[in-house]
Image (cartoon, rainbow, N blue to C red; front, side):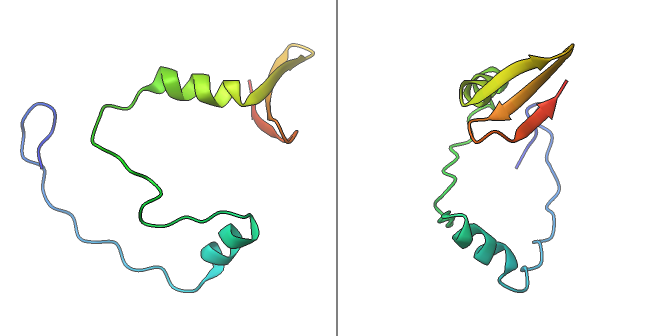
Length: 81
């Protein structure tokens, strides 16, 4: 693998396997079905603007005083600015 400038990147050791079912069980309780096929990434560049638009499009930004509070559609605060 190489960097965008063409420099060879060194290999890194594989991460150790997670032990226990805690995270899997938490996801199951949340109704999530995360598998090896969940994230299909083709190597394209990350589009930060599109990501921000998607997050804000699925949230409810409001001003509370002079502070912008971004809440999910479920009501919990995602970010305070």
